[in-house]
Every structure is written in structure tokens, then in C-alpha cells.
Image (cartoon, helix red, strand yellow):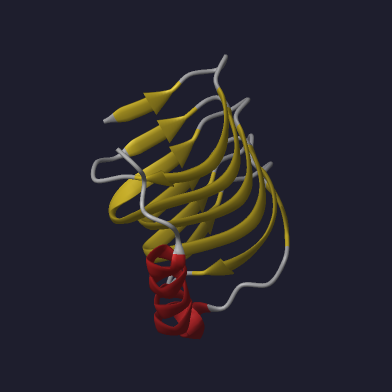
Length: 123
């Protein structure tokens, strides 16, 4: 598991081949198609997350695309578009935005296209 701690501030795209837990801040995208992604309480993401399952306990603004489920914990503050077959909200979670369970395939195709359009890292 990759852990991005409270004192870390990232800008850009995170490509993950393993589960990711974020307690810091990210301005950008998390692409973890076959993995789970968690945004911990106190963490913040301005961007998008594409993953198998997404757990939000912090502040998120952007777009969430999950193949299985999006879970909003009681500490979550979310302003986002959600494309997922299932969404779970705990009492106390704050959510504002549309939920589109039928648009998962289209959202995944757009995310895959965006991933291919990014420049390759230079070694």
C-alpha cells in the first residue's frame, strides 16, 4: 500500500498499481483502475479518482469513478460527480453533486483516454 502522509502536498497525476491511502493534499488525479483508494480524514483532493473502490473521509472536489463502490465516511465533505454502481454515505457525510450509476463504462473510457494522452515520464 502507498501512503501519502499529512505533511505531503502533491500536484499532478498519481498512477497506482497498489492500494493508495492519502492523508495529505493532492491537486490532480489518482488513476488506480484495479485498486482501492482512500482519502483519510484531514486529507484533501482537488481532481479526480478512478479506482475499484473509493473511500472518502476528507475533503474532495472533482470527479469520482468507481468500478464497485464509493463510500463517504461521516467526516467526508464532497463536491463531486460520482459514477459508481453503488454509493454508501455514513450519517454526517456532506455531499453535493450528481450520481450517475449508469455512466460507469463511459467514465472509465474517458479516464483511459486521458491516461493515454498524458506525456510519458522522462527517465
